Image 1 (tube, rainbow, N blue to C red):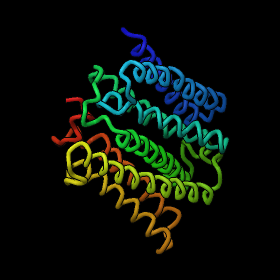
Image 2: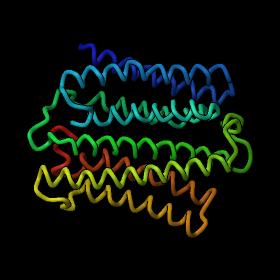
Image 3: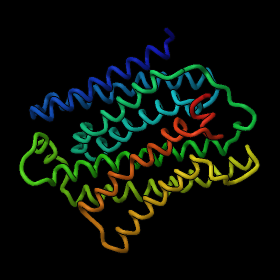
Image 4: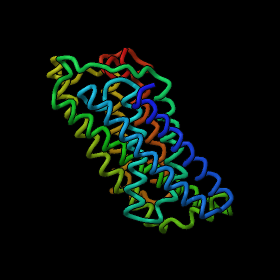
Amino acid sequence: MTTEIILMWAAVTLYAGGAVLYAVGTVFRKDLLLRWALWISLGGLLPHTMAIAIRWARTAHGPYLGFYEVVSSYAWASVVVLAILTWRWRKMRYLGVIVMPIAFVMLAAAMFTPSADLEVTGNLASWWLVIHVVFAMLSYSAFVGAFAIAVAYLYRGRAGSSLAHDVLERLPRQEVLDELSFRLVAVGFVFLGIMIATGAIWANEAWGRYWGWDPIETWSLISWIIYALYLHLRLTMGWKGRKAAWLAAAALPVVLFALLGVPLVYNSIHGAYLTGY
């Protein structure tokens, strides 16, 4: 077993531990467990980052070829989102109860897929591909943050008490969560638009056409339209609070399907480099 794989399994273990401690600490309302959950979760970033760096140095390209690399990088981004939100707003650490299960499941899924090194062939060797992938990661990160905040908003706003009520009450006020979720969606929307535009430029370099209604292109556009609808309803129709939160929460599965599910379901020119087949 290589050093990279050992580090990846260490990250899986720490993410799993963080997710479990978040769940137990939330259900039993134990502050000590919640503090440990945060530090164990963030501790998983160290071996995960090291594993990505080792692979990057060996393959001479970033984590954007093959399902193993792509899904691993999105799991990493999910935990980075939690770290940034916690650094900026200390009370946001409780969002780990939503973010960490997502990160754990994604990384665990990546570990059970082929991890062989993939070569950047001539039609993939472009800076436009790098820019395209960077903005895909940035948009995903923003949307994950918006999703976690929207789910927390909706769950905390339910009438009556719940197992997680006391813990979620420690988050910032509902108005703050609503505004922050909106801002993250707005940023992610811009990044997703740049991702689509740079992807079109790269596609023209690689395949001689800007747009071909490939399944990933189509579903990326659908994702962009859904978030455009969210922003339209919010800015022109006055949607705030629960209605906006429901839409922000429902949009993330579409993005995940566009980024990760489509290459597995459809045979496409994009799918070849995302799945490695």
